[in-house]
Amino acid sequence: MEQGSGKIADGAEKQPRTERGRKTLRKLLDAATIEFGERGFHEASISGITRRAGVALGSFYTYFDSKDAIFRALVSDMSDSVKRAARDALTEPMTAFEVEKAALRGFLEFASEHKEIYRIIDEAEFVDPASYRTHYETIAARIRDRLQQGADRGEFRDGLGEAHAWAIMGMNVFLGLRFAIWGEADDWSADDVADAASDLLRTGIARQR
Image (cartoon, rainbow, N blue to C red):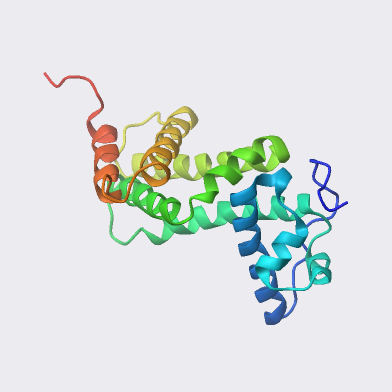
């Protein structure tokens, strides 16, 4: 059935072996981003995805067994895109604080250009809880690694761990929601928001005595 059961099917994304196949897969994932982003998982359809992608319906099943399977692949693809956006914002050399600031700025810019990411990731909590959890656990693990690297270089204090990484990720997620998704073009700047977050990390909120 095209609409799917709400549970991820056993079949998953089938990796293409040719450049043409990779381009078709990319078209399907890009089309799925728009379809799920605009209509939501339950209202989206495989035929809608293939129409947007400009490919035959049969081509869909060359790569995916169901709507559920392409949704799961899309969540993974978006997670990879967030990772690349943060990584591509980094340059050498950078202090540990500059790395956090740049990574947040990269995420804010990515989210402002791909507003559908919030709806799709939020729906994953119910459509595919495992992918939803993996998305956030993976991001938190990257932040924790950066915190450890900063501590090893003597720029962050010792003792920073998982809770600190999740706190920073939570801040970043909601900054993205407020300024990249809800914000108007003229009422926010990725640089300004990243500056504010960086200042909070650097000085905290206690009154300086």
